[in-house]
Every structure is written in C-alpha cells, then in structure tokens.
Image (cartoon, rainbow over all chains, first blue to last red; front, top):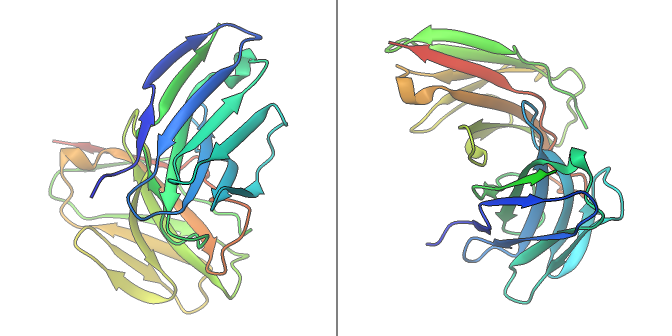
Length: 113
Length: 112
C-alpha cells in the first residue's frame, strides 16, 4: 500500500510568483485535503477535494486554488505569493468525506523571499 | 466546532507513562475525539480516536469521562522517539467541509 506522497519536498520562490504543489493520495482514497502549517503552529485547513470537486474551504483567499484529478491526485496552486505564505504545506487523504482518519504526506516546505 | 485546550508542553523520562489531558467543553453529540502525533518536518500521524469511556490500541489509550468535556491520551512506557507534538482534535462523525481544526498542540519532550 503506497502512502501519501508530495512534491517537491522544498521550494523557494519570490514574492509575486506562482507555485504549484502536488500530492498523490493513498491507494483507494478519494478525498484530499490541503493544510498550511506555519512555524510553531498547528496545520490550518485550506480546502478539501472529493471526487474532483471542492468540498469545503477554510479561511484562505481565492489566490489559493486547487484541482483533483480522476486518479484522485491533487494540486495546490498559490498565485501572487506573499512572504507570509512561507510554510509547510501538507496534503492529507482519506476515504470519503468523513473526518475520522486522515493520512498526511510529508509536506512541501515553501519559502517565499 | 468544539475548541480544544491542551498544555503547551510536557516533559517526562524514558519508561514513564505520560498522560496528556485535553479539554473540549463544547463538544457536540456527534463529535469524536481524535489525537494526532507530529514529528518535525513530517505530516501529522493519526494515533487514536474515541467517543466515550476507554479506547486502547497498540500505541496509546484514550480515556473519555461520561460528560465528554475532556479526554486524556495515555502513552505507556515512553521512549525518546515519542518526543513530538501531540494534537487533540474534535471531529464530526457526520463529515463536513470545515477540515480538521488543529490547535498548537502539546510539545512532549522525553529525556533519558
């Protein structure tokens, strides 16, 4: 059974640029959620995708967008990067939209200069 | 969503039992209590989940009193590798579009 994988592991961008982060969900899972974790804080929910549709969204601006593909992998896109976007971005997969157990990937560390 | 309160940090020693208590006064009838563990530069990992009384798995035990306004994660005979951040979450069994709500967690440091 393959776990959740994310790419790239690290990324450096400059303010104003755009970034795309990728996530492959655990085998058999059809739901992907994205979280942002700033240093010293707990993860904050960005949005969730279920069967290729956005199923819920946290308190993040529209420049944070996403996609889910037919194989349930997912992308997180962030436009017009700001310094405060520097964080660990986590992807979690689950089976269905129940919140009982989510399986997290190792994350992508984004640094915005 | 029920807000949770847990200690910011705890210290213990190898071989000891560690208990981390979480309060969730506004827990709803269809909410579960779930604990995650996170090591530096890794994603959180599910530890245990329960609704009431006691739940035990190979890693930990979870104690939930009858009023469900608090819960206690118990880690038996901890080792250095248990040093991590532990998050207590309240999640709705009915699903929902609000995501998991993480606080700052409890930084557990295990010393030799």
